[in-house]
Structures are given as structure tokens and as C-alpha cells.
Length: 72
Image 1 (cartoon, rainbow, N blue to C red):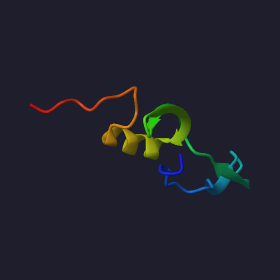
Image 2: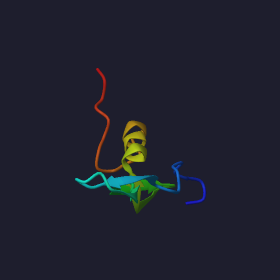
Image 3: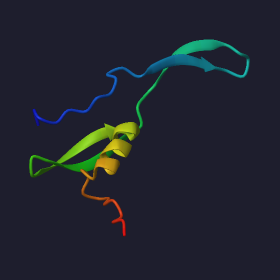
Image 4: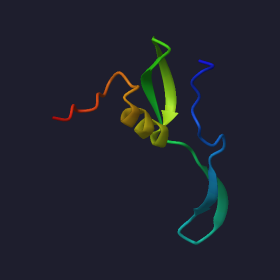
């Protein structure tokens, strides 16, 4: 696992929860995490990754559940 690291922010975004009466209180926008099986150094590992990282993994062809279509 040392040779493979995900680059994403460690904290979620912060904003306001707004009621119907326009009262504002702080809230956090958490990451949209997905459980994915990834091949790392020839070993399958289950990881929870954000959607943006999942898209990058799909493009790289690292995930086991999705393969890039072969070009003709």
C-alpha cells in the first residue's frame, strides 16, 4: 500500500444549513464515498474512495469491476 496513495483533501467542505425561516447554522458537506476493489501491487484490496478518485481509477483501469472498452 505504500506505493499507491490517493490524493484527496482530508476535510470535507463547510457551509450553512438554511431553514425555511432563513436561520443559518453550520454544517459539513461529507465526501461521496464508494467501496471499490482495487488491484495494488497484484493484490486485490477493498477501499473507500471519493467519487472523483473513483473516476480517476476507472480511467486508469485499476479497478476490477470496470474495464476500459478496447479501441478498434
